[in-house]
Image (tube, rainbow, N blue to C red; front, side, top):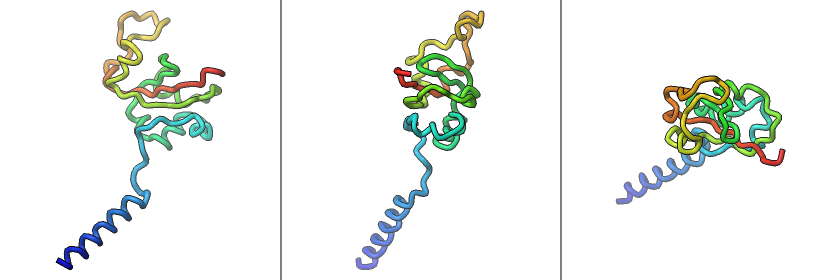
Length: 131
């Protein structure tokens, strides 16, 4: 019985040490605040450092609910004040942003932007309303 207690204590200490070591992967699900990305040259560099899987998983970027383009849009410098950036899961894209149609002005009607639209997540940048 005494030997079991020793093992239980040793394992408990091991698990506590592992949990508090901070060597786990960074959180990759919560929104990124505008202040966090302000330190970077562009949003793509910020997201590659702060939320690396977002850039790999998403294909499109929306700004304030409007299609802005592919993830390459993130390479441009933003002068706007960003409130936060979120990753919208694929299952919520159509519900939040509407049907996946080509952007206005492209001359293409009723043509999906992307065959996988609504199945892949998108990056949504929300700006401060008082610019």
